[in-house]
Length: 235
Length: 82
Image (tube, rainbow over all chains, first blue to last red; front, side, top):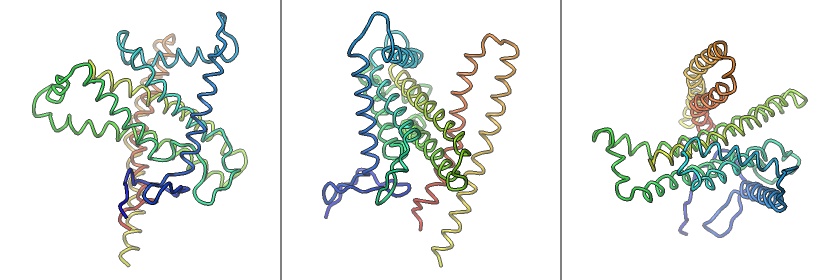
């Protein structure tokens, strides 16, 4: 039987869901990430449903988040381009933030699975690889859209003999984005798991708080770097 | 026999990957934190900006260690040679 190989990198064991004979999914990753997407959608829909001139409650939280994300996009892309790429950067930022915090805040250990365990979706290298490839496609296509065929002049920009390095850079950018996010989240969850198996009381709590902090910083970094790569491509 | 040798070599390589990857970023983060403290001491009103930049650059440096960790994890849990 012919197998469609979408990706074949795995670290640890997963709950496999067979869609057909040649298509398998990591069940727990799909489940938690769809939960995160549902939660974010409901949160934003509720928040913007009843807008007041004087913000209160959930609306002021949303305005704070909007200013945060706008600041990221504005500082990377400048005044004339930031509004076009803000939706992408916002989506990336909130999905990663939601995923990281979903892994750290919800006590998934209470639910037993036959194989693998429920955790942050960014714990799976396929999720982070997908996000990194998305960023890479975005900067490539936007560079192509803004500059046409002249975009390829970038590859011989300082001088011609840097051509191989510039081409390699297109592959190392998504690779480093991918490994940075994946490694940070996995490192944090591994530390918490090891500490929980050694001392289950109180001691893991500071590491968990550090994990929350690291998760938000990683979301910020991913969004900032996406903005920086796009800005580099369109300028 | 060959498998066990490969497994032992992988474990040692994983230890080296994390250990050596920790050295450079450690030095770098120390330098950066020292300079940041110096900057804050010289100009206390710029503390917020310095802290933001410092955290961002910390995350970049930490990524280098994390690469070593990813290599170690893939050697331990997803080893292609065993």
